[in-house]
Structure formats: C-alpha cells, structure tokens
Length: 465
Ligand SMILES: [Zn+2]
Image (tube, rainbow, N blue to C red; front, side):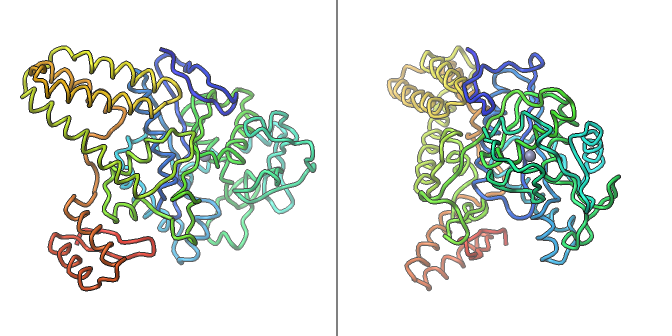
C-alpha cells in the first residue's frame, strides 16, 4: 500500500517517496522555551510522534530534528522580567519540556539543537543570502530578507502579494498576513535585548526566529529533506520565511512534504488564560489524569481536524484504555508464556486495516477502529474458548506491533499513581462544592501517600512530597 500525506505545498494527498530510499529526514518546529508547554503545543508534538512511529512501523529509518527556540522576543522578555540570564531562564523550561515528553510517551528525536548553540551557522547562512543579493543591511545594523527578490514567496501560505509595498519591513518574529514585508534575519542590538547579543559582520545583535530553523534543519538534515511539520499557525510567516531563506541560499528545493497540524480548542473555545481554560500538561495531570490518557485524547482526533479538548473526552479515554488493558491481560493469561503461534484471522485482519487506514494520511480514527474491532472479536473468541495458548501469543504479538505506533500499553513518566489521581479528583469536587473540611481531609490523605497538592489558577497540581 502506498503511504500518502496531505501536503500543504501542493494542497493535495501526495504519495510519499523519500529522497533517499529507506530513510526519512524529518524536521519539526520545537518549543519556544519561555513557559511550560500547553496542551495545544503537545497536540502538534503528538501528531509528529504518531508520524514518526508510523514511518518506523513502515520500515523507514527516521532522522528527526526538533529545535529548541531559546532566543527570541519572548524568551528575552521573560528573562528580563525575572531578572535572570537568558540561559538560566530557558534551562528550566527545556528540562520540564523533556519531562513532559516522557509523561506523554513521545519518542525522542535524534537531535534537539538549541538556537543559542548555532548562531555561527545562522550568521554563515545570512552571509550567503547577502552574497546572493537577496538580503540587505538597514541603517540600524539589522539585516532583512528582500521578498521581492524571491518570486516564489507566498507559495506555501497562498499569499496574494499584489498589494505589496516595496521595501516595507517587519522586525517582529511573529506577524500577520496583512503585514507581509521584508523580514529580519538579524536584529541589531537594542536596549530591550539587555545582555543578549552576538558579534556579526553587521554589528552586535541577535538572529531572527525564522533563520534559526533554516540553519539548523539544513545542518542536520542537508539542504533538501523530506518532511517538515508544525502547527498550522507556523505556516505563515515562519515556514514561508524558512522556505525563502533556504531556497534563496541554496538554489535547491528545501522540503518535499509540508504537514501541518490543526488547532486544539477547549470546551469549544479557543484556549486562553483570560477564559480560564488554558492548560499546561501539568495542570491536566494534576487534575487526576495520566499521561497516557492525555496521549490518547491528543492522538485520537485526526491531525488536520480541530481537536475539542474536554475533561469528558479524557474520561472516555480512560474507559477505552481500560478495555485495552483488560484485553491485553486476558491474552497474557491465556498465552501463559507459551511460544507465540500464528496470529488468528481477527488479529491479521486488524493489522491490515490498521495499516491501510494509517497509510491514508494517518487516518487515526480508522486505525483505532481496527484496534477496537480486534478487541471485540478477540474477546468473543476468548469467551467461546476457541483461543489456545499459542494463538493468544500470536494475537498478543499483533497487539504489540500496533502499539509500537500507538504507544498506549504502558504508563510512563512521572505521573501520579492511580490512587493519588483519584483522591485529587475527589478533592477538586469537594472544593467546587465548597466542602472545605472534606477537601482538607483529602489533602491530608494525599500527603500521607506522599503527594503534595498545590492549587494554581489553572487547577490543582500534584507534586512528590
Ligand atoms: Zn521552526
């Protein structure tokens, strides 16, 4: 079966053919480490994990690069507000990001380059753009990319450039489509940057956000590579600018397939701090849910559809995972350690259906449907007593093969245990009912189990006492 992806560049389902046989080079825009990543961010990383795992399932060797944006407008502002160095400020968020990936059982990428470790590569790339005459230095010592010199500009985001004002410039890292303009590759130092500055041929300053991804992706994956992913909000200006910088410098196609993940909304509304529906992964875990329950919810909606995140969907995920666990336990008990025999027809059929669904732009609904149909058919066969030990072993092997993609069969990471999560959920209910004595009693009970509960504006969080 051919593997197909919806390619933002062509606006159609394209059959996937890697540039190098058997190998996939994949770049993923990573986090800006200026706060804890929220569940909307993790939706993108989960989609990329599913993509990566499925490519490996198909037999490809995957080299994935995910950058860490540790210098930009937001990180500099955060460090200044807290009065600490940029490094000190970003390090804590890098650390928690990796902890969160573990909690969600997201497979590690091969490389996590940090922007601050790659400034020389960015300067070298800007120098190439200057030599080609597609970049220019402004009076203040910043360097801009001249989009008029790159006729393909706007191809990814389908921009209408007819009303473009020649020479208009934008210095911010993020801007809207109605503000299309020459964008900053290098920003001359100003007092808002404090101590954050590097020397360059154009004077002291710092790189723009977009040049970071071009420099680091090409360093680790080559000047042309297979797949570039990100959230749909990265499409413009970030990815458009990455294409312009990279292709103008090399004269080669930058990326063959662009895959974009849609937004996450909460209870039908955009997630925002002012609406009180803004959740980091830690907030959700602190409300008594496990990493794999969150994983299931983030994964189970197709990546190009809006995902409506609710606590009810998390409870439904718990029920689905219980069914999966029970089935696995039944197969383990029946196989009783016997050598695995051939898988039964209901398992083979599930495997075929699973792969056929995933081949079609990662159709996860079809894939999960195949899994739960297998559980249904398998339970029926087990009830009927027609499954002997080797057959159960064969079915178990199929289940584990599917789980190499889904990553749902085990709890991982530093999540609170089930009892603590249950108590935290009860305590939250008591608090919502303003039953303070009961809430306090549950707090003490949690403490006796070794868990501190801390109430935050986003809800309670559990921490090891
Ligand atoms: Zn990026």
